[in-house]
Each structure stands twice: as C-alpha cells, then as structure tokens.
Amino acid sequence: MVEGRGLGEPWWLGPYGLLARGVHAAWEPRLRRRYGEGYDERRGELGKDLRELGKAHPLWIHAVSVGEVQAAAPLVRIVKEESQGGIPVVLSTITPTGRAMARTLLEGYLDALIYYPWDVPTFVERAVEALSPRGYVVMETEIWPTLLFALRRRRIPTFLANGRLSPRTFDRARRWSFVWKDVWGSFEGLFMRSEEDRARIVALGAPGERVQVLGDCKVDALLHRRGAPETLSVAPPCDGPFVLAGSTHAGEETVALEAFRQLRGECPSLRLILVPRHPERGREVCQEAQLTGPAGLFSENPGSWTILVVDRVGVLFSLYRWARGAFVGGSLVPRGGQNLLEPAAWGVPVVRGPHMEDFAEGAKALEFLGAARTVTDASSLAEAWRWTLSDEGRDAGLRGRDYVEGLGGAARATWRAMSPRWEKM
Image (tube, rainbow, N blue to C red; front, side, top):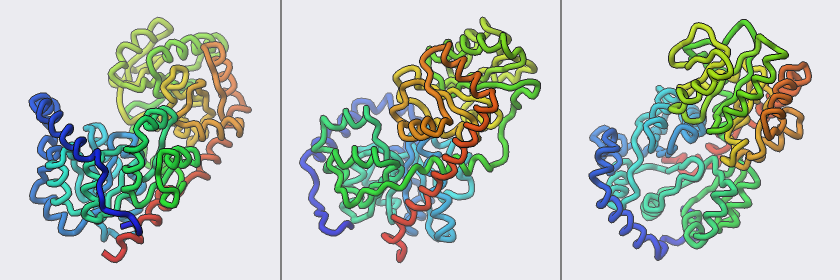
C-alpha cells in the first residue's frame, strides 16, 4: 500500500454500486443472450482450476480488447522471463477478439485467460476472492471503480500501465474530476506513455509522485511481432509495387481509390491494398473498389487483382512489411488516427490525414524527421504516395524505422517499476 493512503472509500462508490446492480438486473436476459461465452466468468463465478491458481497469488493483468492485449503481451513475457516462470499470470479481456488475440500472441505464457467480471459488487467480490492476486495491472485506461476499490480494501497493489488520455477523453473526464481524483488515488503507480499523457492525468487529480512516463509498450510489441514468423495466408503481389491504406474508416477508401487512380496512369504495375478498420465492411469496400479496377477480398484468396480489400483481423501489420508507402486511416475523418508506428517499424514512409490526436507524439516526431507527410484529399494523397515510391521516400522510411527502434523498452521499465512491490511474495 502507498504510504499515507487511507482506506476510506469515496462517497459516490455506494450509489455507483447500486446503479451497477440495477442496470445488470434490468439487462440480465439480454446480457445472457449476448454473452453466452464466458457468462459465468463475467459474473465472477470462476472454476475450480482458477480458484486453485488463486492459492499462488497470480499477477492479474487486464486488457480490454485487441489493442490493449498487444500492449500487454511484452509485459507478460517479461514477467515470466524476469521471474523465471515463478509468478503466475492471469490475463482478462472483455471482448472475444481480445481473447483470440491473447491466445495468438501469448500461447505458453499465460496461466489463465478469463473474461473480466462486470463491475457489480457481488461479481467483483467473487472474482477477487477466487484469484487472490498479488497485484493488478490495467492496460491503458480501462477503469472499473468497484474492482479497484475491492482490491484496495485488501491492500492489493494496483497499477496503470501504458496509460494514455486522448484530448477527447480528457475533456470528457474533466466534467467528473472529483471522481477521477479518487480513482487515480487508488493506484500505487501510474505509468504513462508520454509527457502529454502525464500532464493530463495530473490535471485530473492524479498524485504527481505516483506518475511516471515509461513509454509505449506497444512499441515493444511491434518490434517483437516484426521478428515473428510470417502468418499471412495470402502473399502480396510480386509483379509490382503496392501502396497500402490501413485502418480506414468510411469515406477514406474513396479518397484512397481516387489517389490510386491518379497514380496508375504513371505506374501501370502499381497495386493497392485497402484494410478497413472494421473488417465487416470488406465486401462493401470491395464493391466500391471494383469501380476503379479488378478487386478481390483477402478471405477469398483471389488469384489476381489490382486492388485487394482485407476483410480479416490480424494481418495488417504483416502486410505493411512489403508496402512501398502507407496511408494510416482514422485521420482524414475526425477519429483521432490509428497507430502510424506500425508501418514505420518496417521502414515504410507514412502518410496520414490531419486528425492524429490519439497518436500525436509519434506523428509529430515522424513528421519532424521527414518520415511522414500530412494529406487532406485525393490529390495530396496521390502526391504523397508518389513520394513514398521514390528514393527520397525510401530514405525517409529508414529514418522512421530508426526512430521506432529507439522507443523500445517500455515493458521492461514497467516491470521494474512494479516488481519491488511483490518480489518477496
């Protein structure tokens, strides 16, 4: 427990718990239908094997979905490495896709994989009693107060790892600053990705002495995945260069297709890969792409194509490896952008729109290094992709790769900041 931290609970926790009970009771039939998989675990009803594992006091790491699991993966591996396998690790997720990603990335490293309990007091108490964790780590900012204060009552240390607060999240949170001050005060350590994230969380009432800037664990995950064996079932084209538009939202594919159409007149062998942020949009995007040229869906393994639309989760990062230039989506529309460090890790020059609030630090750094360019429409995207295909673009990509490699080490720094709390257990 942090020295000087009282065990008194905030006044709003009781009403919050009553509200959580009421909402769950009202929605219980719908929740049972929707969450058939893992329903008992979401109610805190853990099986005999998990209760037995609780006797060893595992480290509990929570990662809500795919992105958070990717950030957690290098931390899990380092915990096992540094403890020589002596510390059991339980990873919880909320989404099935997060669970699937955890199985892919962390096979052989996890002692248990569970669904996170709903934040209803009865469910939380069951789960905490069963697992009896030595510590709890939440990735990014997936905050559930009932669990945090249940752990606090038992003097179980809690940590926020890879912490991030986007400008939008910060603006919303300021309206409930008294709640967030209590929440941040329940953590023993708050490990943020950047100085900007640190400034925001302190402005929301986090105790400054508990906040550290340790970097982005997702960079460690990227560098690890970069060296992993290839898992693609469809190879990119080998008879010409291709550019890629990744994690795109509605409207961005239209811009990418028009930019590609402009470039095809100069480079007839050029190909385009479109990777919608939401794979279920794949068929719709493919129909639009067919108006520009021969297009196929990744899942259907087309024999030949000019435009490939990816409708499968988990292959974008591998595809960046062969791209000559990459447009990172969620940035021409006000979605905050997606992770432009992914293509940069492969030495691919990066193109993005003006909306990059969620990845502002990396965007600024890559632009400063000349490894990224900002576009606003199809004409500027075509010009930027033209640059990526040049020798100048190739050199720019190498500068971006060097930048990403220099960011590694956050996961190990996070472990070293936490481990003294339970190294004698």
